[in-house]
Image (cartoon, rainbow, N blue to C red; front, top):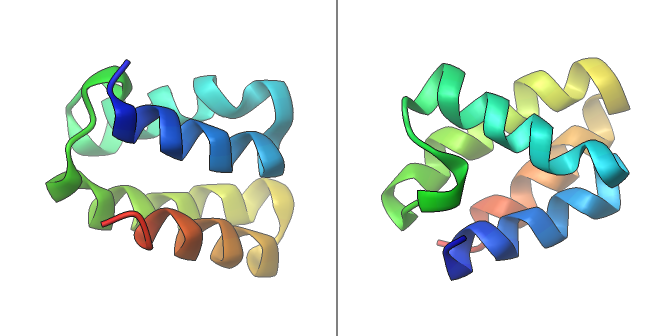
Length: 75
């Protein structure tokens, strides 16, 4: 797993617990056409967008936006 992927996962665990990696893998494969383990800095903006949309359905819009903004801050 890349250092960037690990940083994103650490943020995600705070919001999604043990489901974090599966959630991120699904977002990357479905929307970014890449592997979460090989995430690159150029993919962070698109991942942040999908985190906001998809996590909002699970953890609420406010928490999803907070989660997304933390990931977007990794650029």
